[in-house]
Length: 305
Image 1 (cartoon, rainbow, N blue to C red):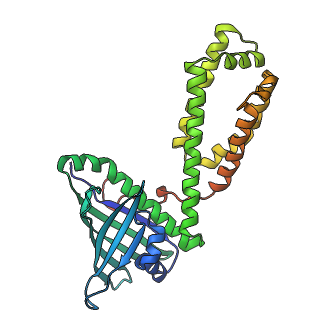
Image 2 (cartoon, helix red, strand yellow):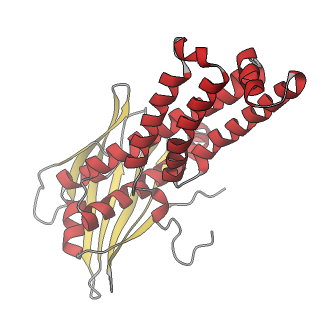
Image 3 (cartoon, rainbow, N blue to C red):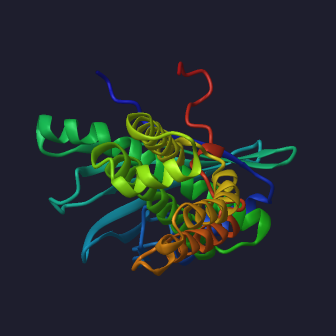
């Protein structure tokens, strides 16, 4: 199966000069582009020579990928658009990318600029590299699109890329925490262990007892797991945070009504739910207008989806 180049397009309400500066100045470029941790321009041999540079990308655990690049052409067209072409690569074996080529285009519109990129690359390690690229390529496309939205918000709203990424990754971390909490609470005590305290609390709050109460607790466990999955796929995270801000005090009160002595237990519902309630408030505040890759077009005009 033929691989598709990565394509990302986004409209930005700004002048072409402002976007050009933030994408061509290496110190500005590395601030918004998630794919690069640092970019260093090398001295030109002559004024007309391609602009060579070195880049680094930190991938965690002290590991980083270093590579090279060349801006092999910048073209100004009669319609006012600009194109910047690029040739890049790395010799590091840790990277599945060996080398590639692409371009950026800056197209004036009535409302600003359409900023777009298309690039492709060759992978190393033969069939294994192609298999790895089946998962790696979507990640690269997502990182490019997210970076473009961060650039757009920086240009249009003035919020620095660093602040945007802090909000984005903090929201993602809290999201994964709530996915874990609801999954665990639904699966382990309610479905697998059928913990007596879970059944006892439900019986105290309802008229059900015995097998019926156990079955009802199991249904609640399934609903909690479904709510956990919702945290992964529902895009409007603020809605979920707002719901939890209302729900956690109710869950705490219900637990204490069912079993007042639980307030004296270690790691009891009062401290546990209070912590999650505060995290919900923090998440609600952080999740306002978070950058997203979904704001970009990922298919070039005329291409089939």
